[in-house]
Image (cartoon, rainbow, N blue to C red):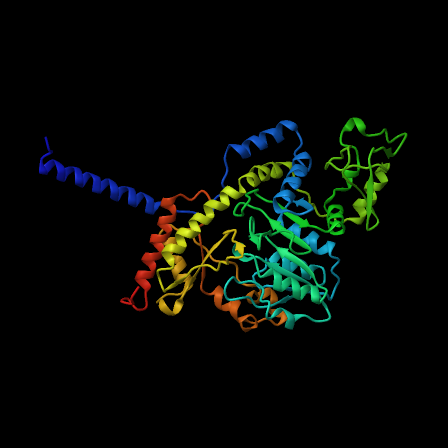
Length: 459
């Protein structure tokens, strides 16, 4: 027996109200720009670490270094407490001197450029490519002088820069190459994993990065000399001492500590290297190390805390094992965005290249502002009013007041100035579901329709 028309109408009205209620609830829910992808695997690693009772740098940190080096495909990976430390130690290991020039993109991290200045060197900002926002290979040769010592290459948003051209120019002029890969895990360039293309590469990991450690960073290199220098800079002076209290000598009778493997001397400092014994950071020594050795290392270091703790490394190990799966989800979201946004002439999808694997750390949507009756900031405000946690990149370095004294103006890097003014970064992270993705698309489309400069323009 079929339901009566009145009953059918009532059911339809109930379904419509429920649908509207769900839509209103979804619209009122704020979609954050990013959230970490955490599950039982991180909890298991942390529990194991806590039960081991080793919270500072120790076996988990060593394990994380080994697994990260294998993942990135480099010989050496040094874990540090944050990305700023990674840049600081990398620059120190390259022995920058006052007056040296370091060429970098205006979209490089401000921490990196400030660390260059802290060493007495000079950051030189060179404009970027219009598609990809990478250091321009065409402009780089014109910025090189007799004082140029290094080039820092930033892989913006997760798309690798044009490394072949940039490396060729750098090698021709005898320049060191520093990669800023904070947004580029797991990116590849012509089948090479980003992390070992230059002389030294810096990764940074916090809550919104590809690996959510809270705080953490890595220095990666294939150079043994750079790695040795970085390890000495990371090492606590007391890493020279025995791993347990029972091994410590009675200093009233002897100040000598015996080790059973080998040591290495770098820049006049004695640092233990791997063998069978283990110090507090898992290093070793065949030479007798003394409390005086530790004191001298303390005097020769800069005093900054640099090492990653085992708690962070435990989370990092679990995150690294999910890195490819999390990237695959980000790529799915990016493809969905691209399909929708490419239909609108008011929008321009992010750059991508067939020779590279985009990490999709950020989804940078470009607004064709001449086709819209709103500014980038108005567009952003409209998104946030609709519950979408979109954001914008930090201003390029040449626009920041801290560098006005160096003579930089908006016209110093015109493409960076132009592109910054029209970029919006949309949410893209592995915990986003299909409904979340569609919410972002619906919000963007509704704003475009509202502010379209030519309402009846053919699609």
